[in-house]
Image (tube, rainbow, N blue to C red; front, side, top):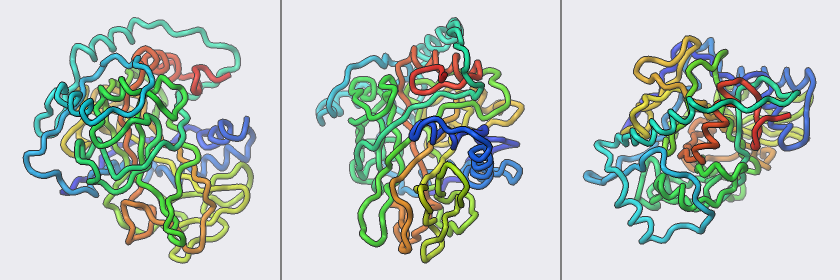
Length: 402
């Protein structure tokens, strides 16, 4: 099974100045100054995208690394807009998962339709929603976020291999604690215990597990910030994300070296002068070795335009697209907040380097990818989208960031 990458027409998806600096702000206190701004400009130009160079950051092809499920394997999808106000609970039992799956709308050929009534209700509520007063001192970066911690690891992927436990390479999950191969959108609203703040984000986010070559042990994330933001200079037509949307970024099948200066490599995050590519490299050149006090980081950009009809597609990409400065393409007319993963690892790099579970043999970072299975409390999603992204105000986990 082979899937091509998203095409990103005339896009400018790079984070607004301050994105990496704000990583520091959330984890090490408020950081400001020209040095951080300069660092951010360098990072976004090299590690997320070079907008002038074309569609490189749109490698949205997790599915490319997978084998198709057996013929006749049914896929099921949850309807969008289901109530997302369930109480925290432990993981569902096998019988509960089976029962939930039986109530899902059956997908045809992998296309999972949005629940039109639920999406209309959410859209109508969003359009009628008044913005909250903006306190003094709030910035103008159009974004809100969820700060998450590592939850668990499984060889599961409920987007690409729904219902097929153990069929994936190993993934490291953050957010909803109950997620496994059988998870549906309905489950995410019922079993809402999470490692994310705000707790009204019931979503699950996951990436391939990183392993230390020398020890063979996993290196789990120590910080996982999920931005929801505008990629463009305006927020015209911005709409909230429907519950149950599945989105994938990156290319699990990509096997290329990631030497110093390459796009799509891990980098060293720091809060002053230093080298994003590391003070040295691993023996194969694919991984940075960070100087003090930096550690390994990765940023992953997701698309910002939705077809308005489907929560998923057979290759997990056709229902999404990157927009441009002039808006979304007619095939994907609904503009939604773009998700960005900003991932921190406690590791600093080693001479032997690392490998991802999606490419153990290649031992490079090129197969890094991420999945987002989005379910929020609907009112919270609507308010954050309107207050923060549509109104172009900086928000944190709790709303306006003062």
